[in-house]
Image (cartoon, rainbow, N blue to C red; front, side, top):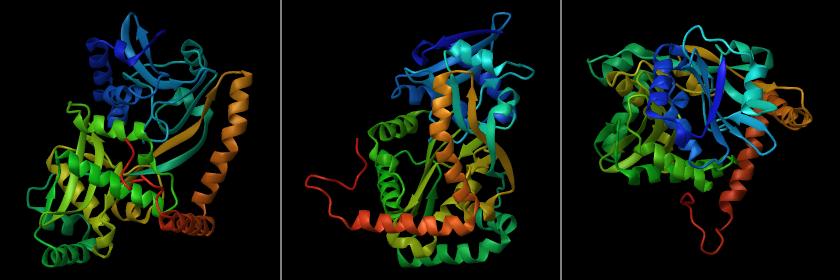
Length: 371
């Protein structure tokens, strides 16, 4: 196995086509976060982004996008943002993890959403987690019949709230692929406020993430398209979702709603409307992403498994990094796995969020995401 390392601006049209072919040949690699378009978007903002190209008999058969620090620590491309990570390869291709790290100049490779089929990395996985998905089938009978058939327990309440929203605010409508960038800014503003209210890190306070989402919104390719979906009541946006789609998979990424309308359950409406419309647009799987959320248990049809861990070579840097990162991950996973710990932790974060949102902004501050 020959391995060459490339910057993303060096990837030729032929290499990208080979990468796309590897995605098409295995359902495990059909996720849009595994597309070269996503990795290239991240690489615009991350100077250490590289791609390892694996070749057999001179033919490119595998692709590993990653980020590398000056100390030789590697991480999956977009770690912390990407909900699916893998070395994308054609069927039957094998590799050795240590040899791959050596070729990449890495002492360690960190991941947190690794697909289960990555057997050469399996001995380095420290934990596996459920990633719920919805299997979709197109139904031309309309939204209400689809909802009653797919989710009979939710249908009556959801349809009632939609009718109420239409009476109270304005005619209810849904756009699956909204192209107005102003609505993307509205979504980011809502999501930023949600992060602050719940005490979470505000991703949209980071200019590079805002710029990345802006860029991905403009990408319109077969294997990666940025899809913005919006719920309206009259002319008023009520809820929105932005996520990438490939030919067959739509990833649930950023969903938010107008907090003034929370009593209508617009977030749940958003997920249900998106699922039904995605099926009509050729999507077969809606990936809800790793995480324990009640609405995911309501909506999922099955679960994938994703792994987190550290693939390492013997090296002082890899040892130090694991000693630093391992306990932090372990504590987080322990809290998330036990409701008795997770509920108090959520309360604490919300209390922090209340303090954060009650503080006046500094002079010249803004509620909108930073550029």
